[in-house]
Image (cartoon, rainbow, N blue to C red; front, side, top):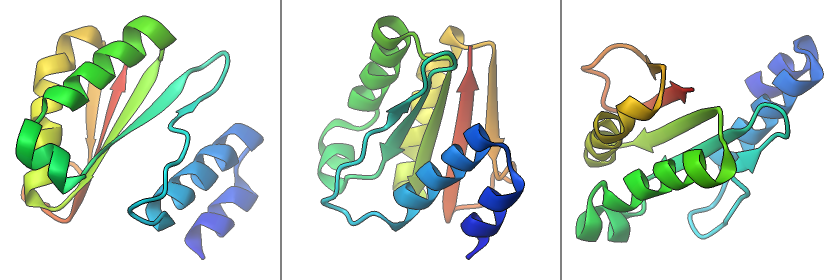
Length: 124
């Protein structure tokens, strides 16, 4: 598996991130994972995708979560992950509404026509 190969080549903290991403990628819908990591460098993941949240509330709960992570948990970097067109649109709205809290915002993949999955990295 690609995650295992990457983990073998990377320093410990990078292999930890690879392991976290593998767990997120393979988790079951109902499974809850810790999404806040680190002591010195605080990293958090925001998963946009629960249809009942997206359809009823849109970006609002995700925006509130990002703001909470920054203010209450002193998070340095937040990864916003989404799959499927509607969730990607909501993730983009979350970035638009919280962009001012961060010094940089990167998008992976960078191709805006990509509608399969996306990751935004917001860094303070």
